[in-house]
Amino acid sequence: MSINNKLDSLPDMAMFACVVEAGSFSAAARQMGLSPSAVSRQVARLEALLRVRLLERSTRRLRPTEAGQAAYSSCQAMLAAAREVIALSDTNSAAQPSGLIRVSCPKAIARQLIHPLVAGFLARYPQVDVQLVVTDRTVDLYREAIDLAICVGDSPPPGLAGRPLLRLRHMLCASPQYLSQRGMPSQPRELAAHSCLYLGEDERDRHWRFKRAGEAVTVKVTGRYVANHSELRLEGAIQHLGIASLPEFVARAALESGELVPVLSDWEHATDYAGMAWLLYPPNRFMAPKLRAWIDHLVGGLAD
Image (cartoon, rainbow, N blue to C red):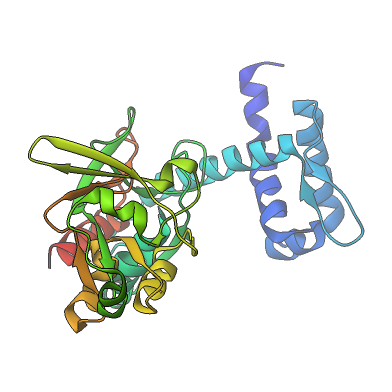
């Protein structure tokens, strides 16, 4: 079969994505105004073309196979690209951004920094919707139905363009009550004798790194409470459970209220989650007006 003939299957790919999102042939059929048998035939035609089973069928719900999940991601990306092409025909798009924006973002950044800016954006652009995909994993902007991704690093990853948003800093905090009982550390090595609240997703998370004036120190910490969510570590520190490693923006309110105080503030606490936060996008992708509006809104809001 030639490439041109295979391109005839694009509607079948779009229908397959619709079936996965809807969860059944009948639900997809209702959305598309077709019969369930017609929808089923389109998916079967795509499976025959690809020579692979895409869906596990049951009486209650359809579930993508491993190959089906990979195909679904690519079909989502295809539909996202199609929407961008269609947006080119909107003569008023430059003046009136519209459509859905899908943005992936790490948990703490999403909750503390991005979510507070969403209401203002939606009020300003009533024809734009926002889907915030909260995940700490690295998304593939070429294969997944994600328009923009926020990540932390020294520079944008290879193959992606990026707009710097703000520089993130990690710090140590503890409650005054905890420090009155256990003492304030004067240098990083003393942390080994303290109860520390750390991420705990990897053994490396127990090895806290510090820098100061050319000096580098790594300390292996221990503690009775480990949590892979910064807000939980924040609450643990407020409840006097120990010294927590936190993003500065997460700890800010508790520091201002006096519930927490900084620890070893004369040292830089180096982590994989500190550095520049970037808003990433494929450099060769058409930048729709809705995306430009969202980027400008985030940059302005975070600067404030």
